[in-house]
Length: 181
Image (tube, rainbow, N blue to C red; front, side, top):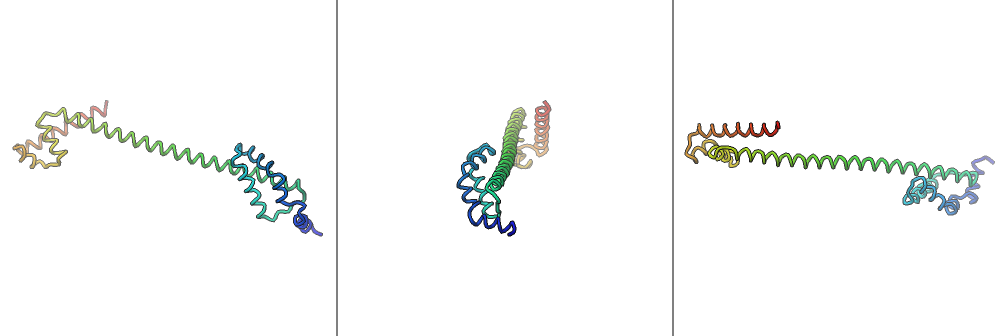
């Protein structure tokens, strides 16, 4: 009789049955997996995964000790795989949350800078002489053309153009002095 047929007959007779080993040592397997994982929650899942894999294979063991050795090694390896997977997931989640937090921080910072910039521009507009301010506001906020402003205020087109030019230069210097300080 060859070794294969001896092992097959032993397995078939139930002398070395995986079901019997599972029933007899289940709690020991779960405790062992819990120690390797440092987490009892996933220990039972690991043991079930190992036995599911063993039942799907055609493994034949010479003795119960050989089966136990194989099972403990499989539980250890599956536990290590699970720990590595957890580390990868945790690393991804940490990296993703850091990136998201950075994006939010940058967005909030940009929004704050934009608000601050508009406040600076408003302060600069307030420093303009009254007529120059009026012409610039009509040009920039009301989107009126120079000729429309000229007609509405009864000023020459050249005067309106000069006032807009003066207002832009004053605001440019005002903003530059703020940005450079």
